[in-house]
Amino acid sequence: MKQVLQTLLEASQGDDADLLTISFSRPYVARLLAVFEQEECKLKKGRDASSPVSSYQMLPQPAHSAVPRTLSEPLSQQEQRVLRLLVAGQTYAEMAQALVVSPNTIKTQVSSIYRKLGVSRRAEAIAVTARLHLL
Image (spheres, rainbow, N blue to C red):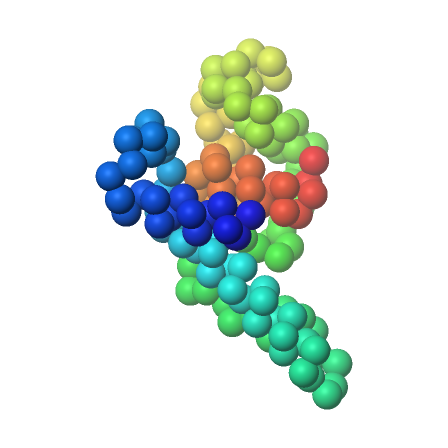
């Protein structure tokens, strides 16, 4: 995965015509690559450490981490339902229809989910959901 992300980031700096049709966030890819580097450092330090230390204590925390280790608050059952639909790619209107609530209710619940996950976008929420095995 690290190699794919590096290749994508490097290729996006050139004039590759195939990449003109791909949309991605360069800062997010760079942040993912930084996490790979942190994990490699953690593994190396873990092998070199003489005393047992939590692997998370060895990792420097990014200033604006979008990937929490745990949730600050657990998701309610309704928020879990909304999150499943969000991850499935449904629009707010489709979620509202499926859950028999108003689109404004969905908007409020999605905001609450984002707050609890520590994210601000759907893609980040999906990544955190996968990382924390929430569904």
